Length: 256
Image (cartoon, rainbow, N blue to C red):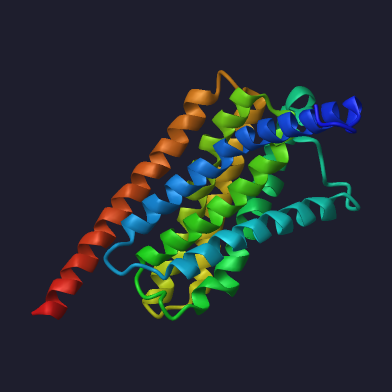
């Protein structure tokens, strides 16, 4: 022990150091999946890659979207429409279904989609349908990172790890639905309003249904919830492969 340093100060410093190390280890399951999926989507967009700064901005917009989402939940309180989803799961199954479909799904998908429409569509580099899925996915990654951070203090390390890997995938797949619909209409030069309404409605409905299943029966409903996510992911892969082929064919025509 250094001369003149009180033992209590040393113990406090050690405690803070240990707590800081534990916190850093818990944050890794949040950061690593985000980095993995960011690299994955950057690679998927290799035909006409988006500027990394734009992708980073999309991720940061996802952080803001999480704040908007929280504000919308708070705004439900004066109207008597904000509920504890966990409590509803234990006491009112129909109430939870209504809350999941009419509040959770719409609020979270609207919050992410808002910045996509207001900011992302202004990028000049948004020039192919695949960009809709790519940018929407980065917004979903940012949203998931904040959501996981908010739950961190309530979870065990194992739960934090599981959620850290699952949450980004969940937000990516739902955001990809409206991202694809809007992006396809935008690149084709059509009005994005119908595509926005359709894509948002599908994403919000499926998101709400997913949350309902995982809340009302966390274990027995897990296979059904997982099947829903896998089904959307397969659809997403097929769409991305089709768009890749179209982009490659267009590039070959230009070279000729």
